[in-house]
Amino acid sequence: MKYQGEVKLNVDKSTIWGILSNPESVSSCFPGIKSITKEGDAYKVVGSAGIGFIKGEYKATVTFTNVKPMDSMMISAKGTGLNSNVDIVAQVKVDDGKLTYDAEVKVAGVLASVGARLMDPAVNKLISDLFDCIKNKVEKK
Image (tube, rainbow, N blue to C red):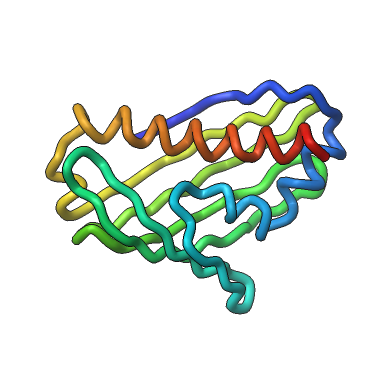
């Protein structure tokens, strides 16, 4: 599944990059976060999530790669939980007053069995919550 979007921000590029380039700050925006620990270049995240009637705990590894300061980065998350595997790869680009993203989400297991009818709205909400959190952090800085 592919997701694209743009978040308008009332701040300049350097302020946006200041928050986006802080992995702890970005990782804490993933919904349902219970803990974040740094292990090498990656972050181990434990949280809870649910789609429809399927709810439970997940564990994910989040990495930030292809970092081009003041311009863009890739955020990758590989997670397991809810008898499923989820891989997310998002290209995030920073401009004055906006953040754009292009993400691909791959799901296998029980979550995949609920189908696109339930997955699309849930993933859209997760992405929306993630970028709303980032927006709040950026605009409060």
